[in-house]
Image 1 (spheres, rainbow, N blue to C red):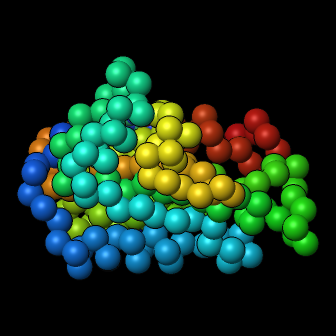
Image 2: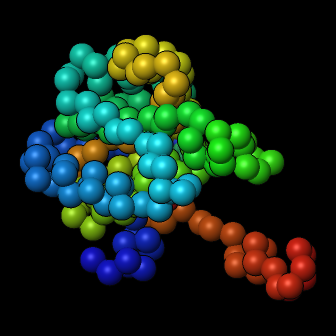
Length: 182
Ligand SMILES: Cc1cc2nc3c(=O)[nH]c(=O)nc-3n(C[C@H](O)[C@H](O)[C@H](O)COP(=O)(O)O)c2cc1C
């Protein structure tokens, strides 16, 4: 699938078939993630592929019951949890190099967006999930000190078709030369 088409046709999917995803396909989406750019090529991201049903259910329990992705975490044949090593991205000579501090969220987001677009191009569905108890998820997954859990996505074949959600007009978000100038 062509990149622009993948960007425009990807949707957040919250209903999944039980159909398994083969190992080669899982590897392809992980490869797409690891080709993302990162701060000084520090590659702070780590990915945990969760296929164990009990662990998936425990992860689903870290989502607030009002989170509409909760069933997707239980249903999908696997969940990919993105973690980050802290104190690497955004750092120069072991100190934060900018007013933003640690850039791990940015680098993990780039990798995960590569992953979801690659998944979509292979006919798979995903949804970025950020609203959950990341500390509890880290306990469940035995994530070591110095690392944190950032997001997770179910990965599997879609069991729903979704219309695109609206986006702001470019006029509202793009300025020329100075902020606010159109
Ligand atoms: C950082 C981030 C966190 C998100 N967290 C959740 C979440 O916890 N639960 C959920 O159902 N969707 C979550 N979403 C999905 C968004 O709701 C979705 O991307 C947005 O509504 C646009 O829809 P689309 O992805 O189909 O274009 C998240 C998306 C992003 C980028």
